[in-house]
Image 1 (spheres, rainbow, N blue to C red):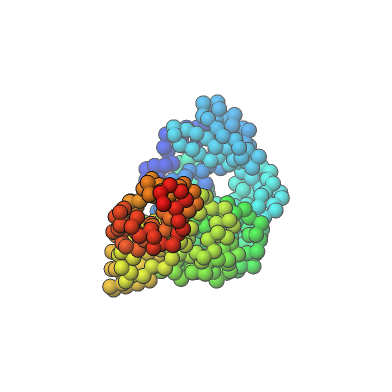
Image 2 (cartoon, rainbow, N blue to C red; image 1 turned 90 degrees about the vertical axis):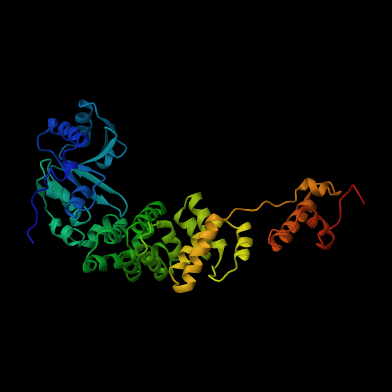
Amino acid sequence: MTQPTRLDPATHTWLCSPASTKVIDALQAARADSVRFVGGCVRNALMDRPVSDIDFATQLEPQAVIDALHAADIRTIDNAKDHGTIMALVMGSTFEITSLRRDIETDGRHAKVTFTEDWEEDSKRRDFTFNAIYCAPDGTLYDPQNGIKDAREGHIAFIGDPEERIKEDYLRILRFFRFFAWYGKTRPDRESLKACARLKDGMDALSAERIWTELKKTLAAPDPSKALRWMRTAEVLQVILPQSIHVDRACTLIAYENKNDIKPDPFLRFMALIDERKWREIAKNLKLSNVEKARLKAFFDAGPVDPQEDYMDVSRRFYRKVVAGFVDAAKIAIAGYDGDDHRDLEDLIEFAQEWERPVFPVKAADLMAQGYSEGRELGDLLWALEDEWIRSGFALSTSELIAKIGNLGTGGKSGGQG
């Protein structure tokens, strides 16, 4: 297959959008032919995928980039200036502009860099071949690492020696599987996969935040099943998530979603992947947000879902549980059923989503009117009455519940009437 040498701006309009053109003109005014598109925008264009984030590489050093942008009245953010990256804010869009670099020191997490004007030298420090394709503003492609071929074939491979690339930043192991989940069309590159397996323990030095971000991006792919299974085979998954004992359950869920054209829910897939009994440990290790922890706990609290469970029994479960946890558990379970059980679970999910919490008819004031005083005994009695009401299917009235007080064994009155 003949590889393209140019992207047509008439087709790839992001090449000449007003915002990107303003950035290009500002940098070119400081030095002619000093800027090219790079990374995901070029890769996705070659793979006929949507282009969203647009990044630039430039021969200008960071301060020169800032000066050139300011001269064109373009706002900048320079938090990553020491690493060579400047953010440009133009017409509501944000562009990442990185000076050509080469690494002079790495520790597996961060790199100390120096700047260069050599495009090929810059390409050698990037991660994967298809992320090292540069595109001039007129659409001309520059491909020093033969990434165009890999992009067209859906082949994910490290640049040069995979072990060297990984040792520069161990997060690249997870990025390898993430890109495989999103773009892989072939088997994983053999040498890259072997290097990931050999160096997997290096991920221990990565922050929980970086690991969790990559894992979520992987699970957001339309079908990350093969990536998850290869991560298990290479024992990468076991390092970052030792509680991931349900890979096949997660893959079953993913297949069900795709078959039924259900929008991917990365966190639901994550819950299908893990041993939910260890949710506290998982939440702590990955530093999940409070919202994520609450959803994970609700999934654990929901317990197993039985397709044949009576609706009233389900209602009783709902009353003191988070209903959304049951829905999550049922969605994960449904992928493993077919026939009548499948339909029953679908009906249960619909019932749960429409369920309205009934209002307990007894209040503290009702018991105080019977001579009970505020305190722990009153709270215990309310709880016991609520249990009785739940068991009745929420049917008992206030008077019927109060009439049962003597049979509940919760203690006597603390004062008032005898």
